[in-house]
Amino acid sequence: MAKGGQTPSGPSAPGSDEVRAAWARKDAGDVVGARKDARRILAQSPSPEDREQAEDLLRATATPRALYGFALLGAVILAVLLGLALTRYS
Image (tube, rainbow, N blue to C red):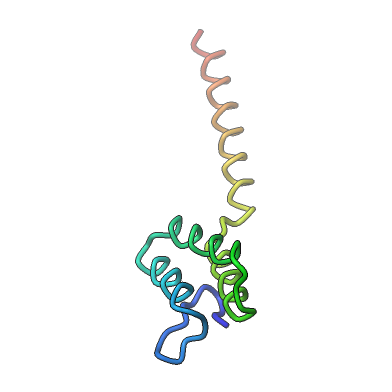
């Protein structure tokens, strides 16, 4: 099992060719394609090893929830500053 987003590598890497191809796409920078491949693998009836690798790939490429909170905070601050500027200079 890959830990911390690390890609399993080498000839003894677990999983089928499809799973290794999905991890290779992630390493190449195609995160969206890798996630699609992982979802496709999970939609089929994969072996337990392939299921675990696909779920690990989805976890490794997920957007952290805290990022959405920081984006919302930034939008609120921008709206407040814009509101203050409009009231000051209008």
